[in-house]
Length: 228
Image (tube, rainbow, N blue to C red; front, top):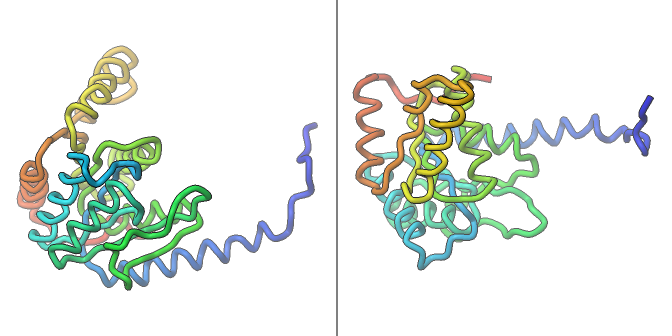
C-alpha cells in the first residue's frame, strides 16, 4: 500500500479557516458592488496591442450600461478592463491572486474593491457569483480554465444562465470549430445547443447587444448567480 512520503501536517485542517476568511472578505466586498461583468484575458497583453485597447473600450461601454467590471486585477487584459471602468467612473473590481512570478493589483482597481486571494477556487467563486455576463478575450491556460469553468456551470444548471462571450474570431474561431467537429460531431460529448453558449464577436457593440438582448428576452431582475 502506498503511503505519503511525509506525515500529513495537522495545520492542513486549520487551512479551512483561511479559506473561510477569503470567502467572507469576498462576499462582504462584492455584495455591495452591484451587478458586474467579469472580463478574462491574458496578463501578457501589452498596452499597445489591439486587444488591450479593445478591452478598454469594452469596459467603458459596460459601465455606460450600468455594470461594474470584475477582472483578475493584474496586468494585460485585466488591467485594460479595469482601466476602461476607471476612466468612465465605473466600478472597477480586482480579484488578485498570489503567484510567485506575478505582481500586485494594477493601478486602475478601486482601492475599496481590491481583493487578494491565496486560493484559486475561492477567487473563481467571486468571479462567477456576482457577474451578469462573462467576456473572454484572448489568453492562456488561466483564461481557458476560467472560461470552461463558467461554461460547465451554465451547461449543468449550477448557475443562472448568463451570456458567455468570446472576443476575437481570429483567436477563438479554431477552438470553436474543434469543439464542433471533434467534441460534438465525432465524439458526441456535447449537445448541439451547447455551441450556442459561446458566441464569438469582434466589437464592443456586439457584446452590449448580446447582453441587452439576453436580459430583455428574459425580463428578469439582476441577482447573484447562485446561493451557496
